[in-house]
Length: 97
Image 1 (cartoon, one colour):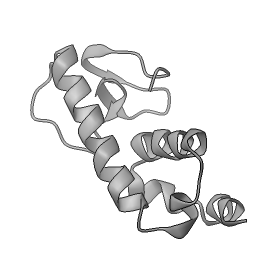
Image 2 (cartoon, rainbow, N blue to C red):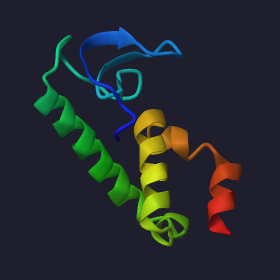
Image 3 (cartoon, rainbow, N blue to C red):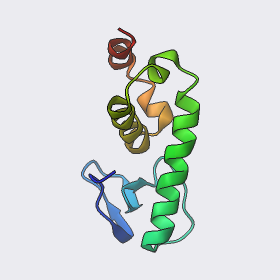
């Protein structure tokens, strides 16, 4: 997730979502404080990525991807939320081959 910068306080991202830490979208995920440390933000990031990866493994199209493509999908799942990612039916269809 090198593409994500860090912010210790809540800011509004380019599309208007309240965000904190490493692009942690408060419209998708909850967080109780208005400030966050780098270790806390990294913990949230890794927890979400692990959770999303585990959920995505139930989809054959994801399971069959190489590591680089999985990283792209995980990045999207972090930024859009898993349910947001799964709305892109045509995109996913392209990964099914």
